[in-house]
Length: 263
Image (cartoon, rainbow, N blue to C red; front, side):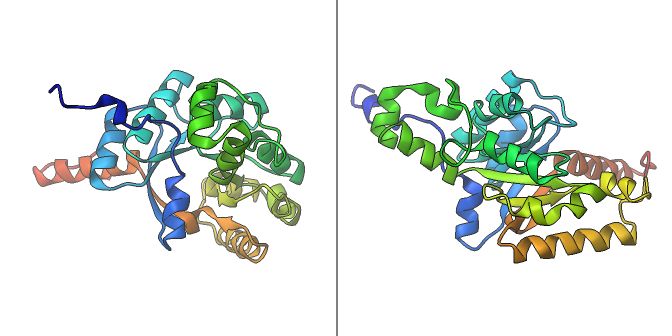
């Protein structure tokens, strides 16, 4: 026991974006999507080989404290965390970034101005207008760590920007009509969809698989790729934990000779 040198251990901190790392290897990242906080599920995901965790802050039940915990556990297991934030207001985005997330999905991005606002909130100057805080997303603003590991704050800011995914959710006819301007925003990495809301905006509520919605989504994705942007599904494959649990639960009930509720 006395021979263990604890000073030789690496100090944990913000990690390289594991989604982008997998992409550089020519692979999609495997992501577990959560709508509620669970450190244990994050550990399970790491044990079976997931690359990252995604949190739904628009429809989920996350507090700042729980986001902080999810990021700490995920980063400790070598997984990055992304999130759909509840709002693209800069103070809201910054609150989540300060917890340590490395990818932001901005919901209901309908205009180029909203896409620019999202990118500005996610990226440090000179690329954006992200505020510098004292949370784990900025290594607790600890000069010694920033200087030793990242060679200063400016270097860390550049590194952080390079490891940040900025994704606009295109989920309305208005967004589709403004797509060229949205795709022209420099800081935007990718687009993603919202089939239910998109279908409703087209006059097809409750029909996310409506042919018109599918056609416009396919066109939007093709235009994004031509513009040099990515589609979120190009970068990652996501398994929603509620789908996994409901499917497994129904199979378990049926395996015991009972009729599963709702299916």
